[in-house]
Image (cartoon, rainbow, N blue to C red; front, side, top):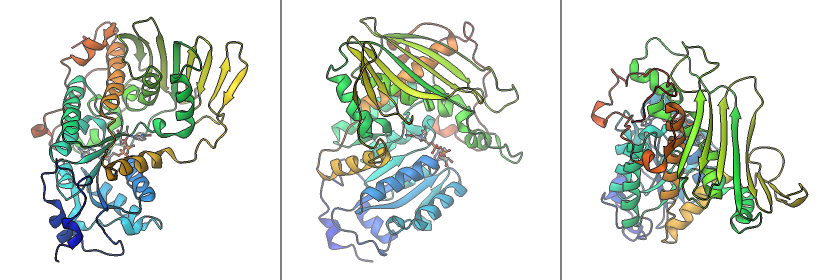
Length: 441
Ligand SMILES: NC(=O)c1ccc[n+]([C@@H]2O[C@H](COP(=O)([O-])OP(=O)(O)OC[C@H]3O[C@@H](n4cnc5c(N)ncnc54)[C@H](O)[C@@H]3O)[C@@H](O)[C@H]2O)c1
């Protein structure tokens, strides 16, 4: 197949100067056109990590941008790629934009490289977060814009690597969009705009909860090797997920950081443990945490999260100021609202809290920013919020006060080197962390 003329004139802001792969020709040899009419502004997307969120993110991007096309997909497991590809292709509204042939579905630990090198403009990174720094590094090296699910690391080594990639992305004028979806929700944006412009006065303290039930557990198949057993249940292994504070309640960590203008706390203390899960249960993560983050001026952020069935659930964020309280209601039915110091309501969000869909907004804005030649750059705050969660976990596991400087300079490095990612071995599962005994590394 000949290279279409318009490929030679695709605008620089989509294929950045940082791109080193001559993807246009390769791509069109591999993907014959079907019903989707590619043109000079078409954005080609690759997906790495074809699970729930990755597949959802791909659909969100294709839904909001009819000139976006999914051209490559990769996952460690073949069943995950084919399930996701079939589901996406079957979607009435976006199926025609899924132009992923067998040759462009990739599996194994190096699937990410093959997706990134398949002539894509944008890559969605949605594997377990332990792999994010490695995948990000290669995506940026190859000149790709990245939509990056939260969190971006599970340890300080990953944070430092990711920050290096952010610096390189900035230098190459690449975009990095964050999957901290609440920052794209119009109701949350409205109340945060009020918080950040002083409507509740000076912030005195913050409170956040992510109290929910047991996490997903995939029944262990005795035929799985050691690595597959960990990957299929990745949320339960700290090198992969960071523990549920870093993987799930990280949304509240980020909401705390957002209210503080993305200034990182100077230190924190934390409690946590594994109270209700039987010892023979898969993995070694805690089932509850409580963290106190502290900033220079003595402002404290209190954060509680648990994954314990049969308990009261709550997922909110409250910001207490010198003039009132902002109640950030997230998925709760009540709207975001503000009350004065006597509890008298002074403002509430009147729009529909679910419209527009925040998961679509993040892609619409990102792709638009790329086309306009000013790609969105969320890299630093995305990394810092993730690391703030890791810092809380360090404090809870060790029982020690942990400063931001201690945390980001920690020698802890949980994720195996790429050369050691094989199916027949997996990182040893450490004993459950014991505050006061587990050392800070
Ligand atoms: N923003 C949000 O609201 C939100 C919601 C859910 C999940 N997430 C985040 O999205 C990410 C994925 O979560 P999920 O719920 O989709 O999990 P999932 O288990 O459904 O999907 C993860 C996929 O990654 C694959 N994978 C694992 N290791 C890989 C590797 N090295 N290379 C390629 N593929 C690999 C798995 O096989 C699986 O298909 C996590 O970081 C999670 O925290 C964000």
